[in-house]
Length: 190
Ligand SMILES: Nc1ncnc2c1ncn2[C@@H]1O[C@H](COP(=O)(O)OP(=O)(O)O)[C@@H](O)[C@H]1O
Ligand SMILES: O=C(O)C1=C[C@@H](OP(=O)(O)O)[C@@H](O)[C@H](O)C1
Ligand SMILES: [Mg+2]
Image (cartoon, rainbow, N blue to C red; front, side, top):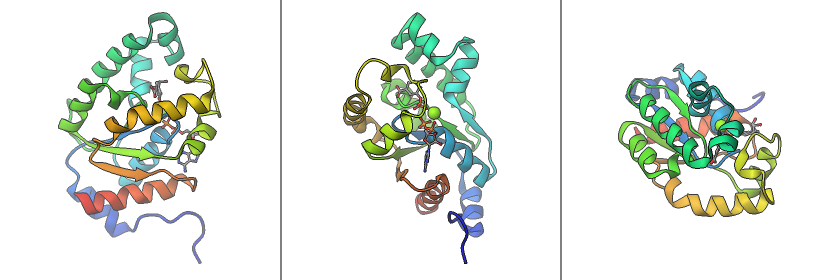
């Protein structure tokens, strides 16, 4: 009997670990699960995890809503690009979760594609809306109807996300299901 979500087979994990030579960078819409799935993916592959948003907060010594409020989105994107550029300096394998807009900035996207393996995590709008509604830490959602903003943003951003090397569904099941799909996609791709 299997209890809980399936985990990738040990030999698949070991085979991916042995062939991984670059960081894995999770990209995709806010609420898709980059931060939470990313942490679990890193634990599964026994490699370090970092969240670019956390590094921006640390570097600026301000929360993300404070940065948007005081300096605006362009300033945030510039800081995000610099933080991610620094993170790409080391090519050692690790998992990096980005904020949803990072891969949409052309220069940041080019940096990631050159140095890492980008994995586009994708969910339908209903799932995204449900997940982002769990907290109010995302400044781009504060003015207007969340469903409408998410729908428009997803459609605007999809051409950029589609440049990622891998595309993996982050469905309504447990996080471990998404981790399993990522490991399987890497096993085929590497
Ligand atoms: N199967 C799942 N995959 C990803 N996230 C999930 C899943 N189930 C629930 N969530 C939740 O969705 C919310 C958003 O996840 P988060 O990792 O912060 O997304 P992101 O970093 O992409 O904005 C969190 O509360 C997370 O626990
Ligand atoms: O999609 C975006 O533009 C943003 C997503 C957020 O990160 P998550 O994708 O982790 O929510 C954060 O970087 C900021 O609020 C902007
Ligand atoms: Mg996140």
